[in-house]
Length: 58
Image 1 (cartoon, one colour):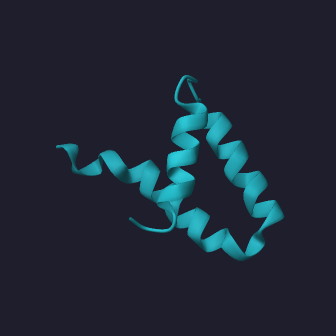
Image 2 (cartoon, rainbow, N blue to C red; image 1 turned 30 degrees about the vertical axis):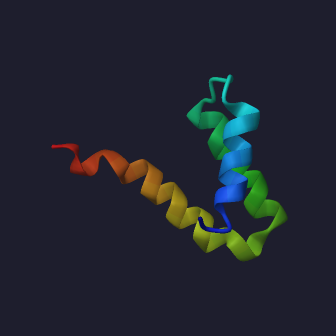
């Protein structure tokens, strides 16, 4: 288990009954980068990963 899995598991437990929109996730990511600019590159890479995740579905 990676250290980050704890945060992912907490997110899943706290939000599992909610329908989250892409707009909500993007807003939260922007807010996070505003508060923690040192993670800008990681958040950008994660956003690109999410945006392009379906490219290999062909």
